[in-house]
Image 1 (spheres, helix red, strand yellow):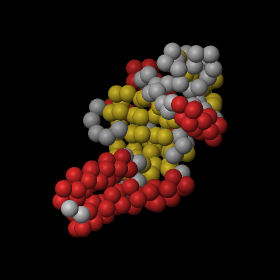
Image 2 (tube, helix red, strand yellow; image 1 turned 30 degrees about the horizontal axis):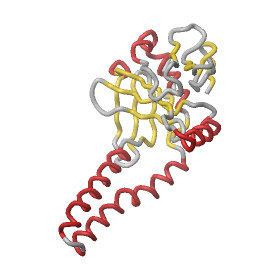
Image 3 (cartoon, helix red, strand yellow; image 1 turned 135 degrees about the vertical axis):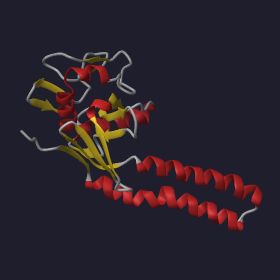
Image 4 (cartoon, one colour; image 1 turned 180 degrees about the vertical axis):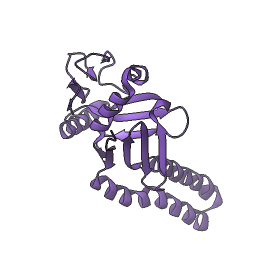
Length: 212
C-alpha cells in the first residue's frame, strides 16, 4: 500500500525573514567591501574588505543550507533548498546520525531567551540534524519549519531497530547529566534534565500517538 509522503515545510514568517535578511547579511557586506576598495586607503580597504567578503561568504553558506521543505517518501528523504531550489534526495539506509539540538545559550539573557523560546515551542528541543554517508546534511529546526515532529516520528518507524544506532547525544542538552532513553516500548524519545523533567519535546506513548 502506497503511503502519502510526510512533509515538513518552512514557515511563512521564516520565508519572509530570509528574504529580508539575505540582502543585509550577504549583499550588504559585499557592497561595503566594494565601497572601501574604491574610496578607502589600501591599508584599510584590503584587510577590512577581505573580512567583509568572508563574512558574506559564511552567511551565504549557512543560508544555502535552508530547506523550503523536507519530506519522507517511503524510504527516501527528499528536500528542496530554499535559495537554489535544488532537490536533495537521500535513502534512509544512508543515515549515519540523527542529532537532537538544544539551545546552548548561557547567562541571564540566554536563560530568558531560552524560557521565551521554550514557551513558544512548548519544548526545549530545537530540532534535529540528519547526517548521511555522503552528501549534505538536513537540518530540521522546529521553530523554522512546521511538521518536524511528525516527520521524525515517521522516520523512527521506518528505521525500526536501526534508530537506536543512529540517534546521537543531544547537542547542548540543558543538563549534561541528561540521558537519552531509547528503545523503550512506551517512549520513542525522552530527554530528562537533572530534575527528571521531560525536556525532549517529542515523546510517544504508543505506536500511533505523537506528543510534540
